[in-house]
Image (cartoon, rainbow, N blue to C red; front, side):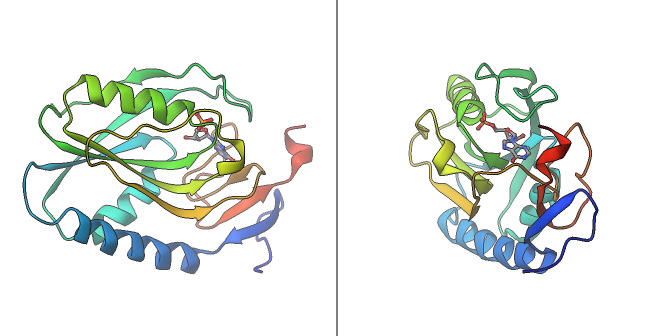
Length: 189
Ligand code: IMP
């Protein structure tokens, strides 16, 4: 395991090389699964946490696609989900009749994605798939109901600890770390 290069990081879980290797695998799988042209593919990134993952993955998907962002507020400044996420910044694109691929940084309780999937369904997406960089299945509270032929992709299964880096933050910090590490608990407990 790589040693942390930031004093607030207890241990590194995935290095930049690990991440980019896995992103390339996911992008190839998605390119295969969505091959075939129509209806058009819209990749929806969940800001801010998914910004690096979204940028890395869309570069490697060999299909025509459109990109948009939503912002979903659920965490405030703590490490526990509020359980009542709110879409605070909506899509610019019209997704009615489109296949949507939601790109998320991490699924924890599932509340955020579940609210977002319901929102995209109500906007008329014919399918909603999810590609999450990390998944914490041990902490799931709600089951994710994908839309239509929607598929679920995940980069890595994450242990039950609070992680930062590669887009993910604590109090808006650490997003620029190129790796993913466990934040020292003394910083938030
Ligand atoms: P959920 O609604 O509980 O599934 O929470 C999902 C959101 O919580 C993610 O989009 C992240 O922004 C945030 N989150 C959950 N776990 C972590 C973590 O370990 N580090 C940073 N953010 C997290």
